Image 1 (tube, rainbow, N blue to C red):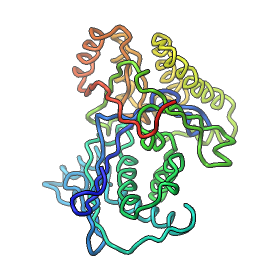
Image 2: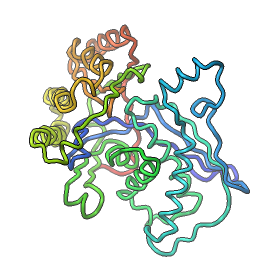
Image 3: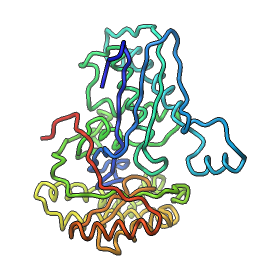
Image 4: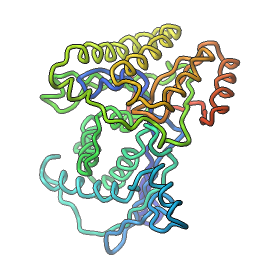
Length: 354
C-alpha cells in the first residue's frame, strides 16, 4: 500500500509472536519471532490543510452508557487508545529527520495531513498492538515526506519505533519492533557489544516455511492476566548471578531453536518451547505470570501440546507435535475454558531470508 486516491497513503503493520528466547532480548540475549498475519493495525494519511488526528470510535471512547460501562472498559483495555501513538509518532519523526540524525539533506515540507487508524489486534494480549500502530504510522510519514531509501536503513527503523514508545513512557525492547519491520521469521542476537556500540542487534531473517503449524491461544479477558510488578530487571542489573544464569539459559533456547528449525527437528523444538515457559515462570514467579496465563499453558499441555508466552502475557503460542487430532483436542480444551484459539498465519516478509 502507498500513495493512491489523490495522495491518500495507507499502510498496515502486523501483530507478532515472540517464539523462542523471550524475554532475554532485554538482557543482551537471543530471540526468534515471527509476524502474525491474523491481526494487524492500519493507518491512513490523507493530505489536508492542517494536521489532524481522528479518534477511533471504539478504541478512543469519550462517551459511555453508564459509569459501570466506563469502568469495565478501562479495567479491560486501559485508559489509552491509539491517538497518542499517532501524535508521538509524528513528534519523534519530526525530531529525528529534522535534526540531522538520519543524515543531511532532509527538509520536511509544511503541508498538513489527517491521520486515522484502525486495529483488530487484541488489547493487552502481548501481541505488540501499540508498536504495530506506530510502525504503520511511521510508514505513512516516510512516504508522505518522501524520505529517501538510503535514510531508511531497515535495521535502524526498529529503534525509531522504540523512540516513539519511549516518548510516551512505554517500557519496551527492540525484539517486537525488529520483527514488525522485517516481517516473516527473524532470528535476533542482541549481542552486548553491538547493542552498546551500534544501539542495535544482529538480525537474521529466516525462511518462514521452517515453522511447523502453530496455534495462538489468547484470553478474552486480559485484565485477569498477571499484573504484579516484577523486580527481575533490578536484580539483573545488580548482578544477581541466579537471575543472570537463568536468563542466559533462555537466550540459549533461541540459539538451539534456530538449529531445530533449520534441521526440522520438531520434537526437540517442542521441548524448547516448554523449557522457555518453565524458565520464565522460575524467573518471574506465578504472581507475575498470572493465573489466567498459567491456565492457558496448562490447558495446552494437558493434551500434549508444547506451549509458551507470545510476549508479556495474555496470549500463548502452542505446537501440536502429533498433528491435527491433537490440534482439535487443543481447541476443545481451550474453548471450554473461554480462551480463543486460532491457527497462526505468518505475516509477509519485507526482508529476504538467508
